[in-house]
Length: 84
Image (cartoon, rainbow, N blue to C red):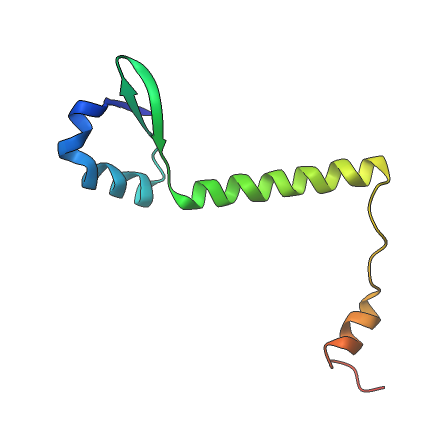
């Protein structure tokens, strides 16, 4: 993670945003030596949210708290993929 002071980041904001977006580099903006904000790629956040959803599913599955699913044959019928 790259750290840069907010005062220095002002003149480099466009470049910093592009670095975060395209190289998935996390840029920490600091204020008086403390991290105040992070610039991260939207893909990093999406990957994080996906990982959280999978972990939540696995937790609920382990606890036996999942709702019953729809059988594949019913899904195919509803989507018009089977002609019976």
